[in-house]
Amino acid sequence: MRSDRTPLGERILDQARDRPAAPALVWHGQETSYGHLHHRTQAQRTRLERVEPEFDRPLGIWAAKSPEAVALVLACLCDERPFLLLPTDLPSDTATDLARKAGCRFILPATGDPEQVHTPEEWTRQRIPDGTTFMLTTSGSTGRPKIVPLGGAAVGRFMDWAGPAFDLGPGTTVLNHAPLSFDLCLFDIWTSLAHGARVVLVDPEYAAQGRHLLKLIVTHEVTVMQAVPMAYGLLLDAARAADTPLAGVRHAIVTGDVLPERTHAGLTWLLPRARAHNVYGCTETNDSFRHEITGTETHRDGGLPIGSPIPGVRALVLDDNGEEVTHAGTGELYVCTPFQSEGYLDRGLRSDAFLSHPLGRDERQWYRTGDLVRREADGSIRLLGRVDFQVKIRGVAVNLAEVERTLLSHPDVLEAGVTTVPDPVAGRALLSVIRRTQESELTSLSLRRHCVQRLPRAFVPTNFRVLDEALPRTSTGKVDRTALDRL
Amino acid sequence: MSHNDAIKQFIISEFLPDLTTDQLDDDHDLLADSVIDSIGTLKLISWVENNFDLAVEDTEMNPENFRTVTAISAFITERRQRRGVEPQDV
Image (cartoon, rainbow over all chains, first blue to last red; front, top):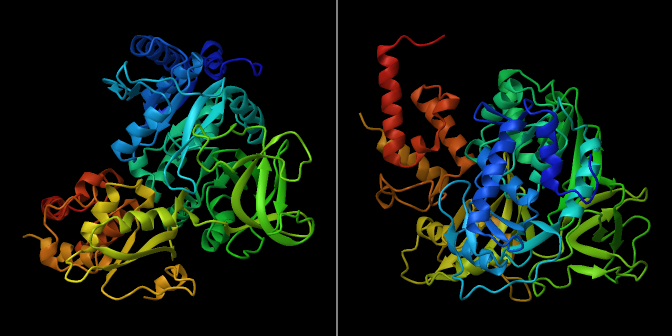
């Protein structure tokens, strides 16, 4: 492995020099070798030079997963260009707006014509931290996506930890379940490639089909996998139906959400030879905590322990009075990781998230997670929920207030409330309840369309209930989210 | 024979309980509005399998087969006809 100073793309293409015939990617059953990936990357570098000759100007990338899209990202990494990975489910106005905010002049698909988002006259340089590579997006607590720039050195440190921690190397096959725009790809695609592993890319169209996932893992002999709890639940059902546990898997990372009790109970059967890890992290800081799942731990307050900080990570739990919880107790989790972002691109957004040590004990930058946790007397941590109105739906942070605001922007909606309800497969699903105006003929179908046009897909409720009566209110006059599921 | 009514009734009872059958168009794009998301597709497939005595293969899980009531109905009709002329696989 080359040093911190080496561009991330070069680290990956070193594999192409040393082992050109070794497989790098599997996509729809087709293998791409490291040599071929190198060749495609060089072609993308040439293309990029034509589109955007200025290497320090960020590029927007339409993150539709494919080997060619992997080559496009690699081209940016090789040339140390900053780039914004745009989720493919964003409404197109939001995507354009984000690209503008990041100072991109173009949004590029993996192949085809770039979309110009700024004319040369109106383009202005945005202040982007030096050394920025990936710019990821997070919905966060305001609901409007925030841009999280990650420095090449921070991502390099993550790769240096995660590769050995999960035994990535030639001969390892890693399942990439998440969409290409997700932070999870930093591990399952980019760290895997930097260590010479083979990556099986799951087509997001089929990512919720247990039988498909099972077949991919068995056929391609996957040894390491990372996915949100829902994927493990789907796999468990499919594997039980086929009586085929995943005996080839050595490491299984569960992350992004709370593992439902039912899936937890089946995990040792599903993964008889794997070490299973419950990993906690956020886009802003990358992985922060790890708990190795034994199968015998108890579920409490809706979840498993997230364990203890990863080497190099510092953590702190502060109670309501801002005092450190040192024994058993609950409070908000603060972390400081070697992998973290220096802050959102737009400093005005959630400006209190990145801060100096809340008790003034060191000179580092800390991140306020917004997660409410319980610290046990032995120092282990369990997630309890959010301090704000944020919930995780299938691995995506969703702000309930933002969904409510969108519902309320419909002219026929008088009142709106959104909450989560248990879902046997997804773990949790969004339920929205609205009161429509008198004489309105509003249906769940038109309300759904209203949401789809304005919100990322994960924010669109699974269930809509349209009422003509007033919604329950709390003593302070707010819609009582806790009473919605009884309506 | 068309299965539109049965399909519509299932979709409404499962995903759009406040609608009546005449409020849902046969050609309404169920995926674009995310009436049926990826998990909804699984529910729908399992309903199709149970109600029409079909086994939906992985290769047929193409979302395009489930985009509209018309598409679902065509898929079922086509599968049942195919089974009618070919001996069923064991």
